[in-house]
Image (cartoon, rainbow, N blue to C red; front, top):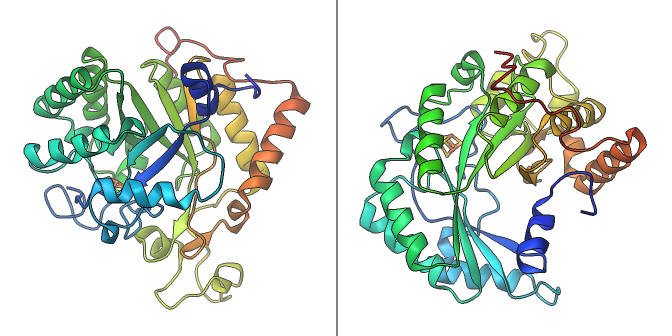
Length: 333
Ligand code: SF4
């Protein structure tokens, strides 16, 4: 391992002997937290792109066409021959079963795709979906199928505030079902959610250790244009980036704190120290699309964030799992 944590790159090097890149896909699906089945408006942080702002646009066409377009984006960069199709935008297990099957088959059939990673909500993991995934897993072996679940936090009060739309028990039952079917799960956690202290975030990490998911994505909270979060924070539709740093004196102060770089580094390092060493780190920052990111702006310099993180890890001589403890014997909740 070249980093003091189990990175996705380390995982790919171990399994395939090379770095494998993801191609983000927009499969043209919806989300029950947006279309009214569960709620309208979605999670408060979710952008109009359904948290899939880097996906190759649906306008490009079919899954196969999006994969080709994604491959073309690498240009002359040396990228090897193995890629993951990442069904990113919206809820990718939400739709007619036969339609979903066709979408997954399209990705799995592509000769350069070694596996698919499907982003979804725990309340959209039905027995039928799990049966379908199990069937495809067998049929396309050795290609893999991963599920990515947006948990964000283990705290119900925060989940309510961000309008996540399902209670923790739903996540726990999805984890049990997927684990029984042998389908690896990557859990998304957001650091810096409104009202959460660093200790709250550490409790989410400790809670996750109890499930030993295959992977974790640790994402910094981004405030994106035209989200409910942006409105809660005080941005109006007409706001420009400048209004963030120049709040009018007569307006109420922002209702929650947005993390500074130094705070984020401290928190993310402690999360790594708490995390079980076998859990693969799929992300440590988060990619807020430049065009729609309102705050925090420092996160746009991803290279600086990662350099600062790696330098600080080295200086503190610390690493993933250093203070890991089993939440089954010491559950802090
Ligand atoms: S579940 Fe995902 S797609 Fe749906 S509103 Fe929340 S973040 Fe957006």
